[in-house]
Length: 471
Ligand code: ADP
Image (cartoon, rainbow, N blue to C red; front, side, top):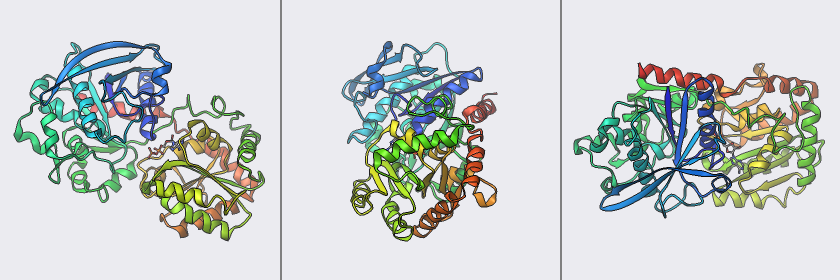
């Protein structure tokens, strides 16, 4: 089977969050299962772009309204990711350093999607499935099915994976002027609440819709940032498939970003050595449990609660634990997390930045990882933490609910129900208590580190899903 993944991010070419990790790993595992999988993404000007060699695979042009747009498809030469990676370059539009955050993002992503479909329409040989990820690729099923120039693509099956339904790519109807010509009576397939909604459009037009955990799929029926009724209506074609993790990258025995490697057998000493590095860098006492938070500093992650939760926990359990936060996002949250640094100097530190290497070192050296998320479609951090022997403290939501079982239920994590100060402070207390019982902690570590959360199983589930529409 031949699968084309289309997404805005793909690790290590460009990463903002978990979407990149998924798109950078799933195709590789699908190839291992004997299929052909490729990725198409915009050409972001990242260090990966500059560090690798590229071939020009295609040059084309298209019209956006009356403007002729030239696009180039480049292909990474050395198969560095284990699959063919193609990037769409449009001079002045896609060749920028950040993935998102520009004023003309709507226009940029329309152009990207149009170029992808235009390029595919030139192929002699058609793929079996076009698998689009999130709203940045959400117009593609519509373009393939309803745009007059591309009707020959309409029989190709399409699958949408919703990594995050909070972001939907809304745009007003004037943007439809840029789209390739389509029958106006089909415009309902683009629309939700009187706007063009690319995510809603993909839910309507794709043959199958997946989300990245079963619990998140259920949650979307009641809470989907305005799309609840659409998810309810389309539930017959919706499934939850949990994300896996890329064991080639996330393996504490081989991870090139770690200063000290370890496996299940050597975890006690290996983790301690990694913790020592962190404690020396950030001025912590190694004897105390180290609790970390890694992630985007946004409301979905309940990052706005962190400053108060950390502050109250220190007041309650003074001198009993350390906290290290790595993240960036909302400036108010960034400031609040920085502003408590002085007050809890020696026990708390925040790194307000994106730092891939430090994140690996933190998963390896910490004792606990805190994820109080309000919304967590799958969550990869808790999977990485468990693989690196770090006990997750999570709110029972989305994928966190599906992947972490509380120690009280014979599991390997600390789980709580509400994204509230009370629950977070209480759970930090449970972590401090658990840390006193080193034998129990190390048996939990053994258990966590041997859970198989690799992509093997989920990649096979996606293949099964493709076959269910392909045959
Ligand atoms: P989301 O995609 O919602 O941001 P996920 O848990 O699915 O959340 O994935 C987050 C990914 O991004 C993980 O690989 C995590 O380690 C990484 N990450 C998030 N913030 C940072 C940061 N500031 N520095 C390094 N890595 C980060």
